Length: 118
Image (cartoon, rainbow, N blue to C red; front, side, top):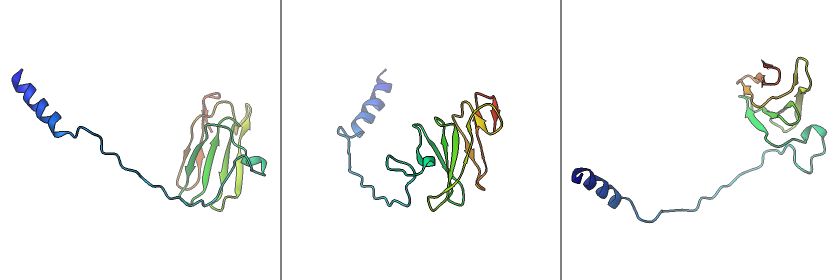
């Protein structure tokens, strides 16, 4: 017991008693904005719980699970296309909760409601 206690006590003594916090400053530059309360375009109204991915060319791909769609936005912030809607057919979603985007911009959406990947 004494052999175990000594290394533990030595370790506790080596750790500072008070945390050493320091302030961090973040500087950011807005490149473009998509969505928000002041959005003018219908496509730019998003539901909560978005998932975002960028491809190699800087194209933003947004999974808007609440609205059952994928929105593709160019590097300039302009709409490229909207894919999907609620429904039962190909390209329509029931329960899309995740997605993957490849470097070349292709994407796949597993739809649990259809038991399929679209």
